[in-house]
Length: 201
Image 1 (tube, rainbow, N blue to C red):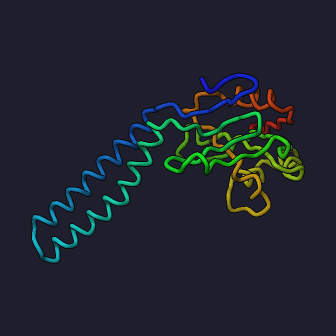
Image 2 (cartoon, rainbow, N blue to C red):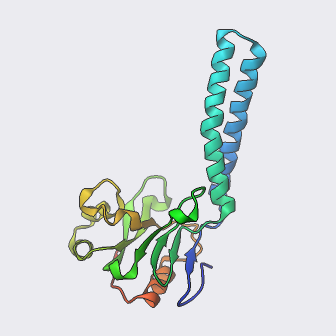
Image 3 (cartoon, rainbow, N blue to C red):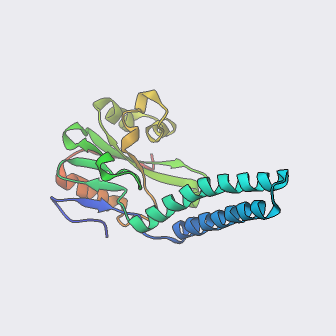
């Protein structure tokens, strides 16, 4: 289960899932196929066809190699996706970035947190839950009073009116090792902040 109790740090991690393992295997297959392209291009010799195969294979090795490293790092590195500390809410930097690139939102700047739901293709049931830490009273009021379709703006990075909340929006994944209810409870142990549940209304 995610992290430790009141005080200290509570960490939420993604469990190893079949989907994450499938991504790793898919990238591995693509890297091997790209290596096959390079080898085929070199074996064919100096013709145009061989050069095209070699170049395409090299591009595939670069792109899919980065994808393979990222998928392996997420699966094996076990870096948390969310941390609740005594100082505030921490969004750990994605692997392979160093932990000094983590972002921290102090509790004193959090006006409220809201849980909301929006339609997302490719998810179970076609919907995805989000937990958003709101760093202003205006955003808190929006979360309380806006119609459900307008709440989607809190989950997007390119909406100027809600840009302040974008870094603190977390898509609640099925593979998280702590349920949303426990995360909210752990946050409120550290600071009594309002919780606005807009998943159904």
